[in-house]
Image (tube, rainbow, N blue to C red; front, top):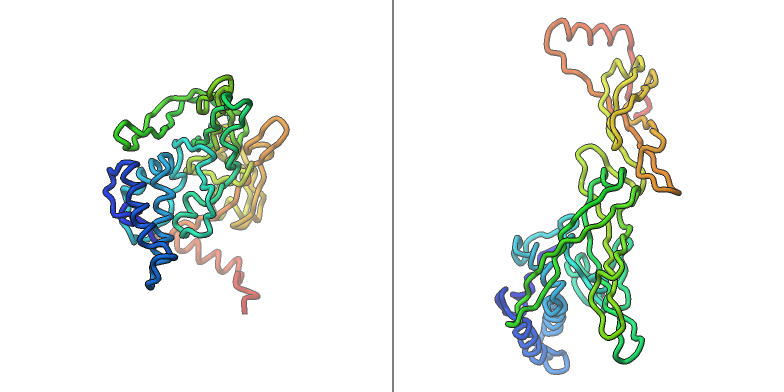
Length: 319
């Protein structure tokens, strides 16, 4: 997938105002509209400028695109960085209300559809013509597995896009204090009532929805509520059995390795995953045998004796 420079598509500099973006799009749209321009490639270019405008005319999408887009050039191979949109506030979840199928895979990977528990919600509902509820706002936050396992009190910084008096998009950081519930999993949301956009009249404020994502952990991988850990063991621990310390999110525990274990064997630590009040997660320990490298002649002799005393063919049945 190739990175798309939307500013280049519209013939603009990156500091263009919102008014300049709108003006550039309208000019190109009149020139390239299929009803007017029948030349080869005009229709494809018309779709491209529509895609660029869909992002740049929206201050929220533009601010997020600008943040990570500064590290890429048009045509470079591109894959969205993990949680690239974390910390940005989006109305309606940040996903387009247009038919995203008309846009490129690049657009789809960023704004085309919701992932996890985020959904495009109605922006507001009217009570009276002059009383409207403020828009709900969505943002993604990144927490550690330990935050979920233990529960936590956190202060996070979110970026709210702002259009200044000259029509340029900037971001305004602000801090939010919240409680991370014990056992929350990736894709779930925390709702902060009344912390969305302000309403008018008696409509009241919208809500802020925070979607949870996890930082990559140096030891553990996560599958919904279950934790997985690759545990290196020695050949003699695998062959003879042993009791070894194993890290968990709640601290080290002793794990019994059954005699005759092989690489890939999976052992379960019940309740050591991400557990909430009504749902429990486990930790699965996957054994991987690490064979010491023989350096001295005496060490090599031990391997030779093993080969003679315990002849085996691990490739039996492959042919």
